[in-house]
Image 1 (tube, rainbow, N blue to C red):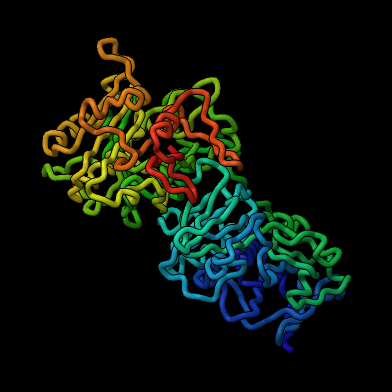
Image 2 (image 1 turned 45 degrees about the horizontal axis):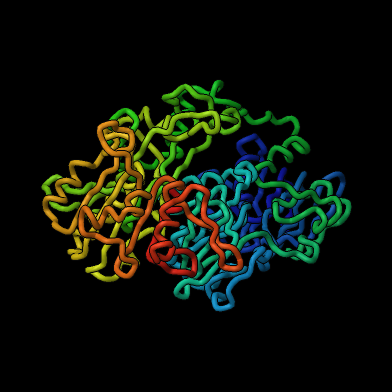
Length: 590
């Protein structure tokens, strides 16, 4: 057997293992050896970039103590070392989710990685640790469309490489990371899994496959499951980098460590003479301009090409991504983001800024649309490399300090922002199957954004039925698309645009509910609200929508303030909701 001494042995070429080896080498540990039982590591390019020493096909069989050091037997190698960190994970099914999986979806919802080609498939990876992050990164590398739910996991618990790879996937728009969301149910729609979320800011999402990586369900010693024998004399210097393994399932004396914090622990205990790593600034007050530019370069992946102000608090933005296309269905939404390190326009103070200053603020916005292109034709989104958004500045109040729009207010064309990779949403024109169907859009404020895209899409397709778009705003100046809508009315006899201005003393104060109560669309445009031939779309103020709650017995409880849902249901309309199709559609995530 080949005998040698090294300072640190890392078992497993995972992202966590590679990260630990790199950090040790950067700190000054001269002899770091990575032992990989297989024939490849998670990121092969990393090995050459950092000149890592690695032995392939070297499964560790036994770790024992010898003369104050550790003896490691691996394949043909007989090594001595100061410490061993094990980053390989025992194989096995994920812990089952806390909800039932439809029995007819067992070929699409998996508790272990499926042995099938997922190139081009939309896949949700459900997890909150290093394993799920690495699996999502591998899937994206194989051409899958990936959404990873991390469920509020501490980003600092992930290895440095896992964090960097996830941020790179987002920046290149190759994956969507739901940092604070976890599903609370899965249903079946047209033979595919529909994933439901408890938090109302995350919409229902449909996928080709869902893979759970919630931690292995170990019933035996985790290290025995890896086939590694560890003598008691060696346990105090052996570490297991697997946050899903509890101390109760590890041999007594072996220490589980979070991958993101492993090197700090190993350095302090076994290499105390090495300098501690330089600390990042703990707050935005200690950071400098170069650090802000570094954060922008890491997180931002798109450029503002147009920033038009209808007035100081109402804006039309166009965003061009660096990577990926801008394909979407009319009515869908995307996420915009800026860093907490960016200045605010209003001087307000974000709660918890000292803890979150180097993180991104992400908010979902419905994708709007120009009504006409520069040649005067109906706008075709397939010809545009940009996405348009309609945004209003949200002022601070005693109850809420908005984070994103006061920072967006200071941006200009050419400035950089974050654009989420996944355009999503079920608030689309899919229910409108007949070209003669009557379609009515009801909105407040910037809630008309998706309706702009929908109206143009219907007109481009030659829709013959009446199309009515109603928007309620405070002042005339809040109608950012007014001229374009009037142009459409002049060109298309079946298109109508009704504006309700509620704070102008020279105009009657009418609300969306009044339009329904008094059937004013029929009076103005001959578009009677007939549930047999009308689809209604609503986006905007939740009080206007007035979404009811359904009890287990089927009883409906309406909000105290009468909303459009109640008035429409009284006229015979049905609310479109999970597993219960209807003709009243609402954007819940506005």
